[in-house]
Image (cartoon, rainbow, N blue to C red; front, side, top):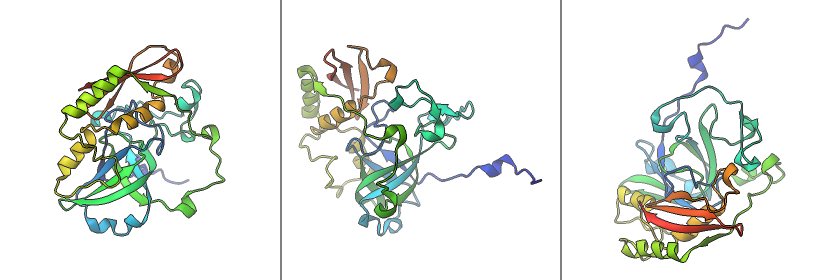
Length: 281
């Protein structure tokens, strides 16, 4: 009979090597899978992992794997672990939020490890004030997400064309999203009153980071509203972030926080989602 090892031996501790900086600060509205919305964000590497030498050669890869921690679920929010034990089954939104499946047959955030895994497009590797910032696109992470590891995406082994995808065999259906005149006016007024209205977009792959600081670059990603953000907002809402049990409720308002604004939207009788207000927070 094998001797039982101490419980501590069943755990592995991994350092946080960086943090994700993004326009979305809340789970509501975040894409449920990567690469559904071309949302641009930044991975801010931490010392000593922010040395440029650690990224030599990575610019030859178009995509990267990112390992990260679900920090807004019940276990990790506010750094206060309140686990109620192992959840063997979950209710994926893709199945209407009612049908249960095994947690290991899902991508639910309520996992034993609390770890997420995403493949995203690597737009740029920038060195600002001697520190590495990774500009990425297509993430499903929110602002402040701790980063555990980064690896290059290798197409010949990672892209398995013949793979079967179970209950998620196709991309989710997108809803039509419209914007009221009042909401569009509110949005444009915020743009015109802002300090950055030339639309040299942070969502542009050619983001110019020279003559700037890490703090100002992160501020642009997290808070500074630009004209092209409305397209991203509409793409996020088209994914339908509403809970499955509320997706038939006509005219019930929902609010998605994006950068420095709260975006209100609701379901219309026509079946489309309509943005009704864009309010500065």
